[in-house]
Length: 407
Image (cartoon, rainbow, N blue to C red; front, side, top):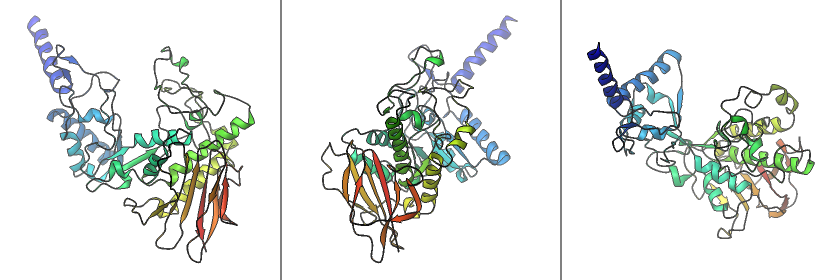
């Protein structure tokens, strides 16, 4: 009996060395780069085959059309946790005859600090969550200085990150909000996380949220604060929907779901996480309508989702003070070379109005206002457009506009 137990212990130790990452400098202790416990040694041939077989099974038997890999930088580590330049598993997923037909998306970081946004090994197949897009858009919209140039780069498809080899704008997944962290409503309602209900003494959840409560922390009846929060949510959505790349939204943001400042709410089976159908119905003709119409606008305008990165002929930046760190206003025109249906956009993150000079519309066209986030519903978005008169437009504080050139 003693020999049997000893044998099982030895087998367990062998399996540990195969299936898990171990720390050779600390008595082969199990490593944790996921925040969830022992980390699989995914680039070992045996473990890699287990992963590949599992993925193929989901595709062939359940017809799954794609995968998003949580904390995917874990898959880029060797047996001792050190980063690999060309992880075998990542390559095999990209080249596999079955998986190569699927959508493959990485969350390109992990809990060990391996941040690979724009540098994730990809073989021109893997897409990435663009965490820099999230952070930079949050900072510009809430009015941080020095973010105008970065905003231009992000809405243009983040060529600084993805214009490498055969990668395309769609390899960058743009997002403001994900399942972790604040909802969109909470992003504009809280400066700080409020995680007491999680039972961890407020130690859990991210502290760097780049959020702004618009003047009052949390719930309020102040009509001015509520109006500003509504504008900010619409500003974020406009920016997301006009950006080159693949947009991603969090379910519930289309009606303004709140978790009351909890940015790590995974453990709650309550209204904090449950979809609120009643709130959706209440806001169907206001907040929800705006979000829905902006999605339709993107779908109907191919120049917002090009399969190549923008050239200097595709966009005109109406800007002559890029180096002014205090400037929080950006205006630009995206050109439609086929039909002349240009789109003009302006984002004002100042706390004062900006009188923008609108450029001439293309020949035989005139400008129609589609979006002004400062206006109340239903005037905040007019899908058919409202004819613009004059050559100027006063853009309210913390608001954005979208014009379309039409016959």
